[in-house]
Image 1: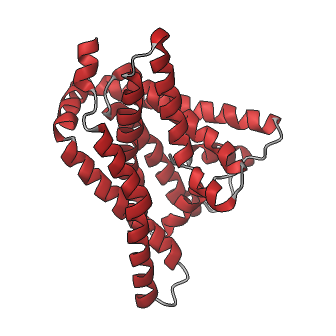
Image 2: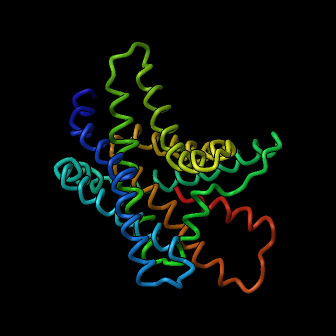
Image 3: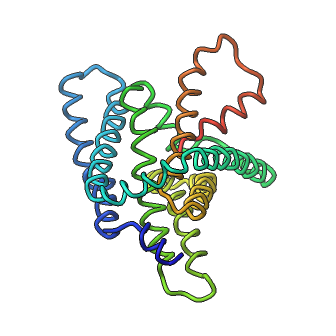
Length: 269
């Protein structure tokens, strides 16, 4: 078992994490600034320049990270994908079942928050993503391909494995790995909004992201194959994209219960 874990462990963890933070917090600012001034020059009267800038920046940053990760991890991805293909039907069933469990867990969290008098709403991250569908050809590739590749590699492949490999007694390393992988995954979806607004409710909204992160982490822990949580992530975001695209086509407003169910399904992670 230990030899299998070592074989399936992600190499170059430090390089990957540095690439991630550099891309998300430095490269994104550079690309965003250049894009914003370019759009303002070319289309000075476009009221959606900010949305277009954010959407295009996200696409470029995630595309760059995906290509860098594939280059750095080409042998690792190849070995993992070969194992993934051999058990594809089994892994697909796990991914679908885990996605359904994640939706159910999200509903439970929503109900608990309501009991605690916390009025549930979409996070700023979620609102920004939905806003980006003004430019669907730019938004969709990042959501259904870029996010699963980059985020599962970082939060399951790098962070989870780093903590799991720590020499700690009583399997504390495993517990720590789950906590770090899930919590940090939740935080990256809401922390920027919290810093910019100071609204602590954004952090509470991160609980649902962390719950999804926990399920993704559990899937990776049980299968020891990075493509299985990637597949679950892909399924979640793909269904969300379909619902977002189809919702405006409805001729009448659906019943409240249907709207509530749809709200759970369009929880893009």
